[in-house]
Length: 144
Image 1 (cartoon, rainbow, N blue to C red):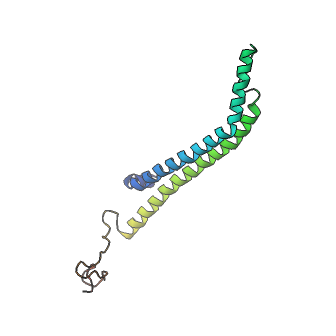
Image 2: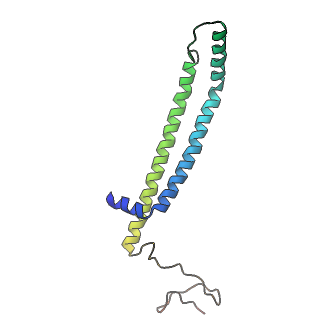
Image 3: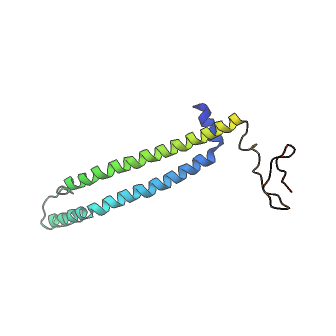
């Protein structure tokens, strides 16, 4: 566990990038779910407002949302599981990003290369544009 945290701290850019992306997606999806719930129950809020105004005009005692309580609870029972699902997917996404980062770092360590000391990507020959060919002398020698 300590090694995984050390590797994640050293290679934090991909993990932080995944965290920002997961947070943005969770914000958009969760906000959409909450906005949809408000849209679905907007009629209940208007009905509660009309009932409150009538109770005030008639000088009756009034308990807010007493008549709409059952319908609002039904909406909440649909929204809460969806928000929990978004939270679980976000946590799985973040843990997967960390696990993949640690696995790649371990593979590089086993191969004897690190991201900082990895050999550069071979580029084509500047003179003729041919693809580089590995020869016994120089790894970047081309065929021209």
